[in-house]
Length: 351
Image (cartoon, rainbow, N blue to C red; front, top):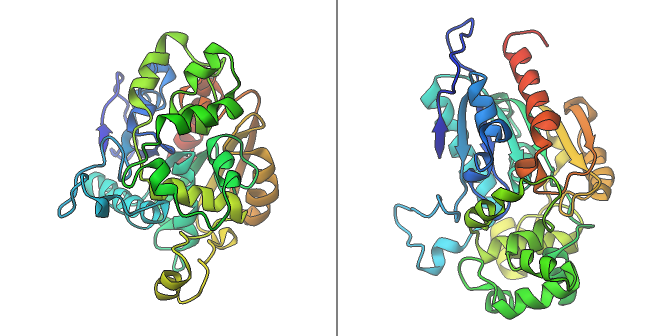
């Protein structure tokens, strides 16, 4: 994890304790997503300069998530994980660590993309409410539940091969997700088009998955974005995402009947029940132009499955692609500053 304990300004809080925010990156990204733009365009700096204690999470398999007490990233066992483990272990550990270090009882959480998926699924398993009480407000940017209707790389390959196909680890790498160059080029022809600019952007797996370059980006920062992302994940995690595309809802990882029976006590993986989420306030920020947080999936799954009582805000933004929520120039006025005001008012007891 990384931490920004202080910003440019000195801000006094009534109880002498700073409000705490944990920011969690998306698929194939890492904590740097929150700081790669100029200070007034980067979520982490916006909150830090407003007096918040800012923590940046990194899940396993990313640039900053490759250390382990017993497993070696050079060996296959290290990479045997998907977002199931990120939700159950990584997210839980990060939240508990932040609260232990700050002495606070709860925190504000801002997740993007996969960072929303792991929070939704962790909350769905929180049967006793002990985890939800630690999350004061949850800001879900480009929220992910069902991915049945997504566009891009994950949808392309999920539908290109039959459900029985078992060659994913040959195509994408047996450990970390490193697709063969010919696979990337083959997919980019169908997904991104044939122009030179489109082809160049789609050489980066992240853009193949999340969508091509946006007109919201600071063009001078594109090389910086590409130098930081993709930041890594396991092939097993990518396979899990493709299983979700086929399934249409949010299942745990499908290991096959034999292992499923041993692991889950049934032939098929269980689903995460989003209707069971309670005990925290959720702010949804999404857009019709998002490849991965598809608006149809948001309408047909998230807004139907989530209990209306937990949805504090439902914001449909114009002209945001999936990556604009962390890199777009409109993110500060349309996402970060409204979220900051909500958190500040909440912390001061004004809401």
